[in-house]
Length: 221
Image (cartoon, rainbow, N blue to C red; front, side, top):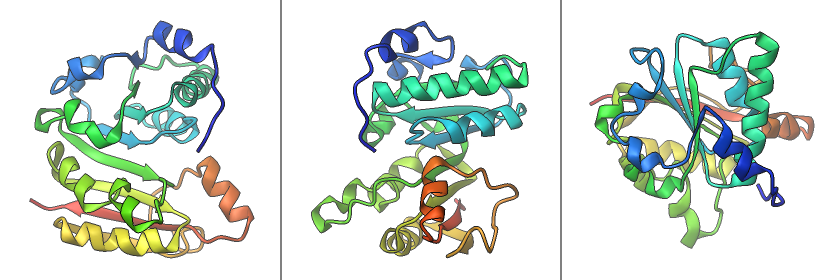
């Protein structure tokens, strides 16, 4: 998603208690950043404006969350949406951190000691051109990286509107040693999650009559 530059985003992020500016320094020590460090740690790749993560983290105080995006303007909006969600719930955002980083280089900020138990990938760029497909967040190249910090029996929750991306991703998961626990070609008619938190893109595509594809892939190693 393209978004206009927002001059307020960087100063607000730097002033935020739940924004990490130099995530490379936290590699292998993410759990220690949280007040309740012994809780499971879940990760969202490409958090966008943060509405999904805001609601998820507020509703699950027994889980710690890390959300990553590359664009300051996007993270600035995520920061505001997260703050609003926590204020409305009258609680402090102590189980969440956001950071800016290139997901293609994610092994610079996460390793096996971080023990991620679940990864969320929602409506990522489908990169339809053949030469660009290796950039997909679900491509085998990326999945091999995630395996370096995903715990045994860890899971990836994936949602997309794109038919070709979904079919290819199922193949990527299989090639990388993941087991597909559940899948659906119409999430709103065939729920596979205990509770589905609708993202901004999900709402937009659904209103256009586009069916949402989703799966849960488990790493059994």
